[in-house]
Length: 352
Image 1 (spheres, rainbow, N blue to C red):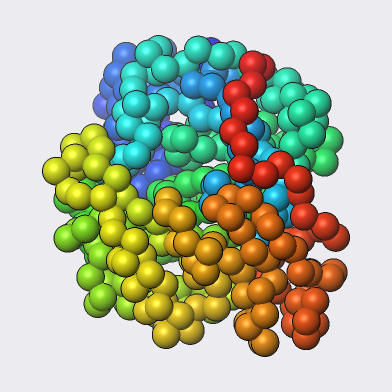
Image 2 (cartoon, helix red, strand yellow):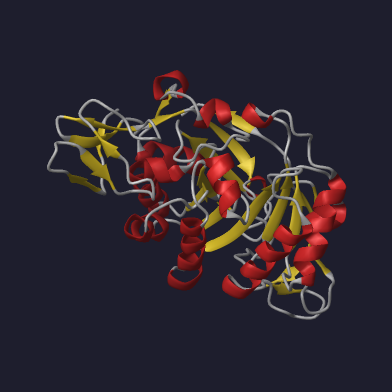
């Protein structure tokens, strides 16, 4: 479905300047931007994935990953096609790198998505699988419908967005997980065909100018972004700029797409990264894509008691009272209900 896009300007030479993300693509008539889903028709910028999805699934919220946002609850997850980054290691490349008509099989209006989430008992709807920044108009409309019925909108994003659209996009979200790919410009340029600085700017914007609950994830790739020095600098920056209470996730890479020659991330690398981040002051550091009881649990930053115990994505213990540690009363950063959700470690496909 074609939908007139926001955040663009017509240029004197007849092209259109897309102002959604830092790429600032200049697009000629009948052509598409880097993301592939934004194109020019009759002198206007069009989003041609509006109302179309690559599929819907119900997941545990911890899978996004969000460990401090209504733990144990279910989230209706969906994406579209395309991406505004060119990550050579993309773990969802069959969706993010696809041409829109190849991947988009299900049609759903914003109101219908909110209706299905409510029918299925989901606490949230997540825009994920590919980056919701490139279908921001659709995501914002879905978020508005979700809020009308008490469903939380959640963005899983790389944060590659310009400041002006970021205000409206994150203003529509209740939570976000931001994928901080690495902590060097060299990595972003070589492996993502993008830049680090705009992502850091987005993170500081979310922290300082919104009420969005957010967590940060870094996929650690052997010999690419997993050195002690880089992990330490990333963690120190997060502690200083985002606060020590911001949850930080280090997740394991598996060989895929154009980086299939790199080995999978050893569990020992994730454990080491967690240790370094905590040395830099981060209080809630998690490891993902591997099984590790300690690395999945939430510990009280005051008394170190286990506030939430997890078996991978499944919440096993929930020792919180009014969002505070049941042992010492210390406030745990996040958004919490009186009791944990009961979705567990399931994944369920849904027809919308």
